[in-house]
Length: 339
Image (cartoon, rainbow, N blue to C red; front, side, top):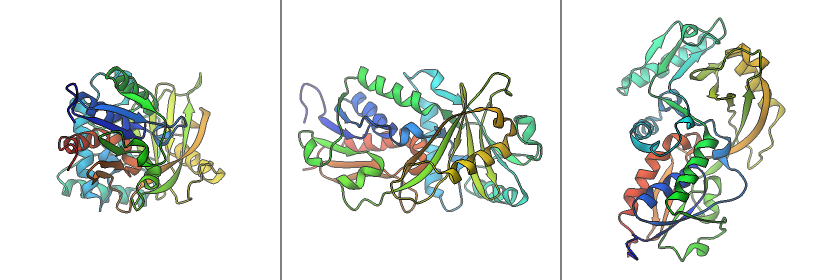
């Protein structure tokens, strides 16, 4: 195991935000790390990049809220160390409601968060915080510690940091037998994880995501992440230096990644109902990806056998939970290979 001062060799299967976060952490801890990644972009490429446990919170998901808040603290403590500051695109979330039923849903979430010991600051003057909101939107709450990151810039920055730490790169694998030369292997390839370890309860859930680009003459860019409830649906608007990311639909459709007219129309209608000025932006990108979901919406992070670990099934929370996942895997790596 301990060769030339290294703790051992680790093969990380998956080059998204989870795999790269673990690779960076393990390399810093003295492991010789090799990341197996595909050329085609995965879920991390399409994500909104929200780091928003309170904005995402919902009654019944107490454990997800708990680990999400722990991970948010790690983002603020040291996860961004060594990464370009511009990867952070917003430093507060504003959660708002459109109609009366949406306001009631928001109140339910607020009461639940307070019951968990995390009261939020409510407002009936949401437009004073974000003047671009539609005139009828008044009710909401803020989460001042939440973040948004440029998902693509962050993944690139993590890869650069891994490179600087001596992480090596290889292509994707179809079987764990292909990484038997490593002391340990980590399965972190999202919806493809069950192909390597049959029985993992991870399924693909489709979601469309749009990127809208600011044009000369348009209203100014948003300053906060906006999460809105729109007639029972949810939509998020995430600031970028050149516009906004709009997402995301969510439905079961196998491994289909073709954007649908209905999904795109729903996102555009909801986004413009929340921020009418977005109707003048350029529709720069329209895509659909696959979230790796589990039955209880909690990620699978831990040991599968003496030589195999898993960090997959993060669903809609991959970027949020990247630091927590890296630390959880790091703790397991200290055990090394179990005889």
